[in-house]
Image 1 (spheres, one colour):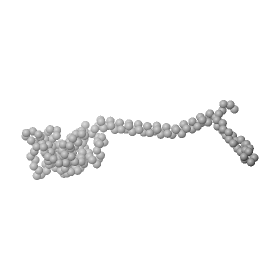
Image 2 (tube, rainbow, N blue to C red):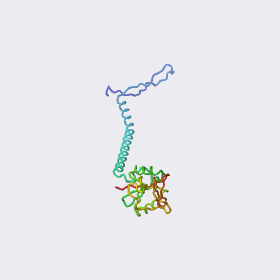
Image 3 (tube, rainbow, N blue to C red):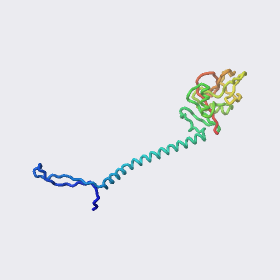
Length: 214
């Protein structure tokens, strides 16, 4: 055998102890072997392998999640009109499509006319412009939560008149019967739950947004 072998082993020697009454007492001597340390190191490495595997899997999972987020973000940037890109939940906004060219939604919240318009603009649209009988009927079929602001306002010119938020003049209208339609400064248009028009200068209401499907 190799004289350099250094392993730990126990050998039992039987000695007679003077205090044992003549009985043999077993004692243990130990020796060292360097390969035993190597085996222990290998055993520790084997135990660490599962942890290394778990760390690698977690890293891979995190990478896949980041890739998915990147893909969704790219889709939202390239096609901002997709409903999935909106930060509101379905309970907050209900989207509907009109003739494949426009998207509409009705808010569940209430704001004044100015803040309502800002909310629409923040989403890439504006308050709805109802300039045809066909679009009016579409609005009437929508699930409006209640009185809702539309993009109708009075001009700030000396000769006050109704106009839409895109600057176009009022040509088609669907005023509710009995409403005084004479334009007054700072008046804003809104629809009731049946889609008929009224106007007010103040108050909190829902709103209807419109944006083009590019």
